[in-house]
Amino acid sequence: MTAEAAVRRTVVTCPHCGKRNRVPSVADGVPRCGNCHHALPWIVEAGDDDFVAVAERASIPALVDFWAPWCGPCRMVSPALEQLATERAGVIKLVKVDVDRASALGQRFQIQAVPTLLVLRGGEVAARQAGAAPVAVLRRWLDDALTEPKPSAKEEPS
Ligand SMILES: [Zn+2]
Image 1 (cartoon, rainbow, N blue to C red):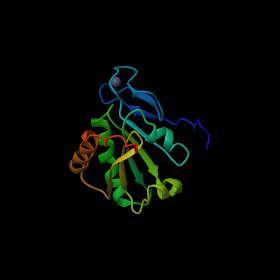
Image 2: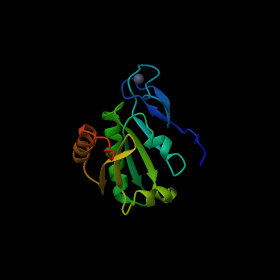
Image 3: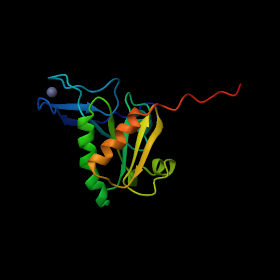
Image 4: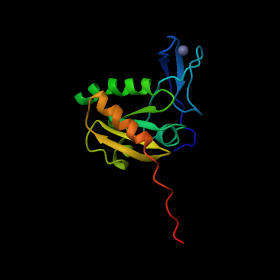
């Protein structure tokens, strides 16, 4: 794997002013609208090659959506996740992983079913949810994962 995975760019319409912005998959800080400077919803795709850069080393917590094109519940949960990414713009980054094209990640995170959702904080799995759920349930789950105190640093054997 190369150190610098190619940065993907997606076009995001600013929810505040309607301007279309090109948002990189990897950046320091959070992407902001070039026109009104509000934080933009950060919704990106990642695969085996760029997951470390896009999700694990993200500047803010990542909500990872393991999905597949053939998965009906994924199509239901996807708009709910995009809504949360919009509501929590600047707070979370939504990272979509197509499990059919990311077999190494599927194995590593032992994805048995799609959708499977993870919250990564500082590269650590803070929460995990398998299966679709209504947006209100996902919002509470996400906010719990974001507000829970991080487990204290691993104790060094003395
Ligand atoms: Zn704007």
